[in-house]
Image (cartoon, rainbow, N blue to C red; front, side, top):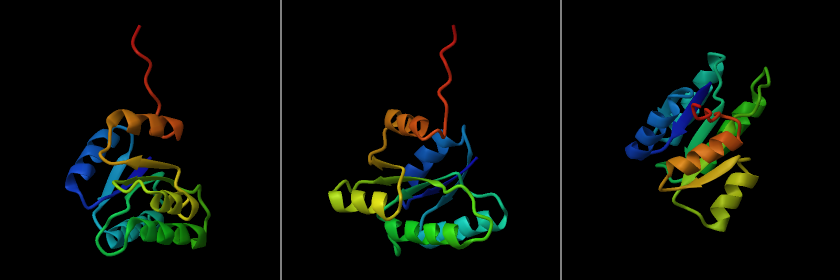
Length: 137
């Protein structure tokens, strides 16, 4: 499994990469242009991302614009694949931004910042991206 983490806040990238690297290879980007380039490179290598963790507030292209571009690339590339799971992460929790993420970006989850480990785990389990290990007997 491979995850793309897109955020311009190094502390968020560190938090997500530290936690998620136990489950998947993690590639990071701090701008929309870097995210698009990483996404295209992954498809070129035939190693697509299973999930994308996308911040909305990014320098240049905002996260919703980046997602629109990723979805366009996903749909126009030959050799259709399973669509990536999209987890939006943002301090923005207003109806407009949340709705845009779900309806236009086809987000699978929307996690408000500050991120909490328990909330992240619950969403990833719900999306089938990770499994919780049963407690030892």
